[in-house]
Image (cartoon, rainbow, N blue to C red):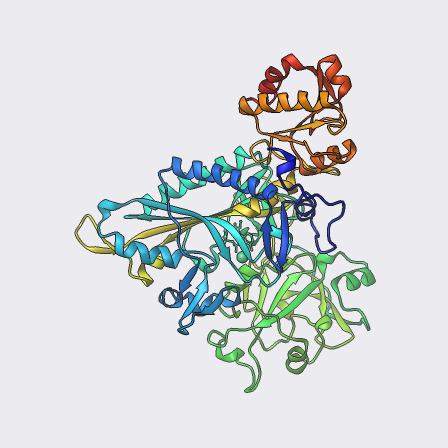
Length: 583
Ligand code: ATP
Ligand code: MG
């Protein structure tokens, strides 16, 4: 490609709202431009990368025997009503009406559409298994679009759906797709982990997420230092050893703590470890599940108290699974707490509450702890669960932390940030039952088809690849994704006929040998500017040629990873690059 015929639109600065490095570099390197919140145009430089990634994904999917389809972005509401998701999906689902006032949505995912298609195409188990995929635009009205294409409202996903006569067969395909996703991420050289995941609103049994490890990741993932256990922190069980506790119970005492509210303030004031301070969180309760003796007074909102150690954080997914807790987990407002429990949030404690009290498993092992006195300006010391509190249930409701025991009993947990780039689910018969997608079984009965669904975020992977591959000068593309492999940079092309002719010759020779070259043939572009642009754009290899080089018959080579140049005799250039690029 000639730079004179290609939009290279680099910038020195990125806008203030670009928080993470990939977002900044994608804007600065001229890969994307913002249209509105969460909506981006892919410029030619970015689109080449996106298409290269799509090709890698297509290749892996086709290898599995998956067939490509393309479904509409606009989907009729009646299918979503059939699956039960029209009401459940929430405001991320963008609902629209056509000119006849019929309801539609912009597809955030395509389970409904593919199930509708398959119920008229599949009649018998003999047609199964089948795998379909598409690479297509999705729309989700994200509450907080951010980080550029990492969390945008419109984005490209490869979504796949599989159909089976049995659960075992679904499981086999699930493993194959797990392998295909592993191959895709390995091929582009990313450091990633496949982790056990929550099935969220889609439901079903088996599920894994693929996370690219990066500090800017929005998820925390936990892995064992001794085994291959890896799971989203949301999903990782906090293991507590049953310790024998011979500690003598202290006397319960009330102390004045005027103006001190947080765990940090209390532990500092009393000079005790945060683990010995118990914090009490008040959440809304599930009115259908709160038993009679805990039913609050008539006009009271049902509440539930969750007690954790001061050094631990609540795990929302675990807490939501407790029947008396309302899902989604909702913290009670400070006004409700004041009105019903009589104190401010910073003075709450687990004693003498007339609402269900759920104690975290690790917190349950604390003795002689400190907590709020349910009275503003006071805390209690020397508190003990069994003597002083009325526990309804002990449950695992906290996030695991670094150094916790691994749930598989091997080693301890390490915790890192991850960017979720892929998610695979075994849906079972969730959609085929609600939408009546049936096939004749071997035994001659109509049975719901087993389904799996598999998503990989194409645009998000481009950003995640940059998060893992950059330096202070710009992007450092993995070879498989680089928009071009080689930059050919002439010095003073507008002044020297000799340089122009020579570079033209090299460009033709390299491209005809199949190299992917960006020829910086623009008139009057300063060498320094061109070199900076090529580093920012992140091309893996660059060649620089000036009059001196032409006279000496050598061209200057530098890899993006290196800080020194190498003179290559022009006659050997082809051979040198073939070796360098593993061509
Ligand atoms: P997240 O937790 O990040 O919101 P999700 O669980 O909603 O992701 P899935 O429904 O599993 O995502 O979608 C499959 C893949 O699509 C994700 O793994 C991710 O790579 C990509 N994806 C999801 N939401 C977005 C978004 N708003 N912008 C870009 N990519 C996205
Ligand atoms: Mg989401």
